[in-house]
Length: 154
Image (cartoon, rainbow, N blue to C red; front, side, top):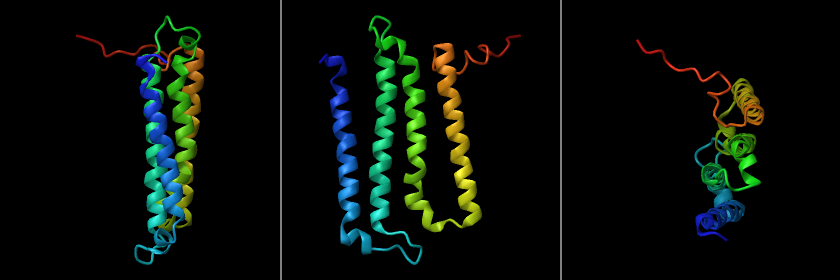
């Protein structure tokens, strides 16, 4: 493996460890029985939120860094370079819905929960649109989709 790409192993290890630790600590009785007031939030949910959320963040940062490192001379990867970040964003948003619910779920009523769901639905749809725009334009930058709008100089 090229030294330029050796960082991806470290990122992968961090993602796996975050997932394993979140799962293991979240399953422990000590964390399950320790509650924060009467809200229904317990230490297990908080640990799972930080573990799974951290893994999602590192996954998205990995995609960003990988997309930035792929050069034009690296066939066939240069053809998919522009869709890596939009695809990772879509995956992270789809998964983040359940992860954020770990912490916010006990505090949400019916109307707030519906609004929360709609925020994620809109975000996922916009992320899908970004991915499709990246596929069509060959660039992950949305400025090309909008015609490269630039402020006019006087």
